[in-house]
Length: 315
Image 1 (tube, rainbow, N blue to C red):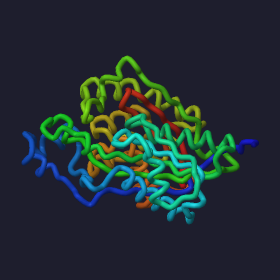
Image 2: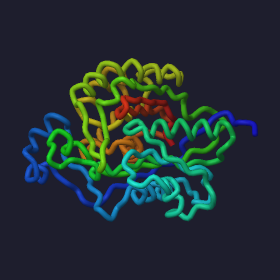
Image 3: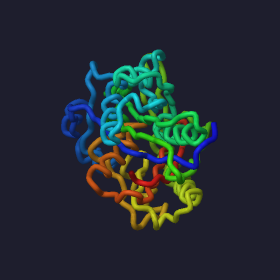
Image 4: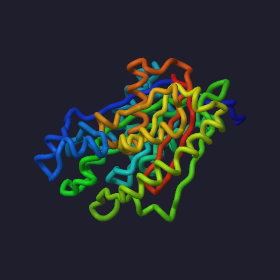
């Protein structure tokens, strides 16, 4: 089949569990304080899924909202991609369970585990599939239940995490509305962010990640803009992985996106790994903070010390 010229994001959706955990409540669980958390990572609250709320349920809620926003039905989707690193079961995979929850017909179903850079990898994969003609319309979801892999006695990590999901519908377009991806990793530093063991537990080397993100990533993000044919000054919004406000703000500043809205959803949602970029973007669009057609930089980074970014046009 002959591929089409490009692809576009048609609509977005997001979902978070109802339970909210504040910094003061965390301070009653572990030696920390609201001031300590706010000053070091910028987080005030995070949403926490219950034991009866698996990752695929979070993902399905976000996917259903994206489909509704696009005016589509589950039958319109022929590819489901779910970026997650916190699904417990190997098979059925999360994408298959989402398809079943949404009552889809016979879509291709794939999970991608690139941790915090998962959504931007999955979005690029959907873009490639649509361009190649192997998919007509894809549902791309980032979903993670980080609180399920958290050591609640470790104050360096438990203050960071939250749960949620964000989704995007991708379809063919006559022009390139999802720009070329720039992706890669630093394999020798993969130990800096880990979800390992039985049961799996999240751990990281925070200072190493901070130094890498704030020094190495800004020039890579500028190259993403070059590939898309836009300057940082032309960006209407910058949606980085919502890891830590002390990473987001200096990286955004070094990119040079002086006219852009900077997503800061980490303040209210914590670090939701693969869910963070689509959730933050969906909220900005829902609030009307980005005009339709405006260029938006999406840039994921983190686990494996992987990164992936692209410039999209806002739906």
